[in-house]
Image 1 (tube, one colour):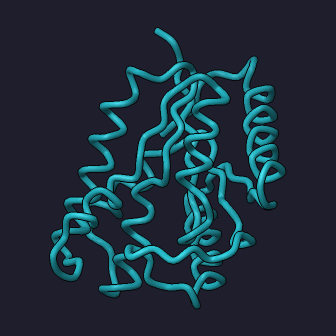
Image 2: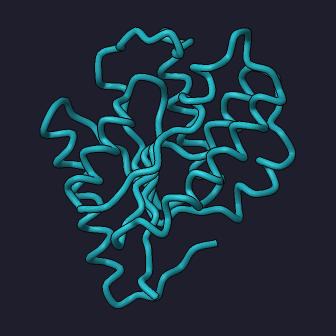
Length: 183
């Protein structure tokens, strides 16, 4: 069976995660898992609830399972359910226990943390244009708490995409003679 490496594209709001995921999937001739929370929240008619956060958590896990067999060596994930933890902590003061229990077990081989150096793009599903620095620090803390293998990706336009490709290529090169490790 082919070993699939999971690459997570993460970061605060309006950092280009979806565009980066699509670009990387095209570059590596594979598929990318869309952000389930975006699809889910577009259908909400009121404020997001605790149960909505739990639903988004399970939805993201199911999407990854659905896309995994379609992947070609790499599975690019447009965000991960760490986002559910971060949003729940911010909105409700704590995260669902299911999320906390599975975070250390559901790992990705490489996380690309997209920097906040892109201009803010308004979107009805984005909430915190003035808290980008705060959320960037939160992402660093969450990834460090998981002892995650991650790199910050900066730049605008093609240099940003090139930096992400270089980070993945370097990771893959470092793994050529290494067994697949994932929690």
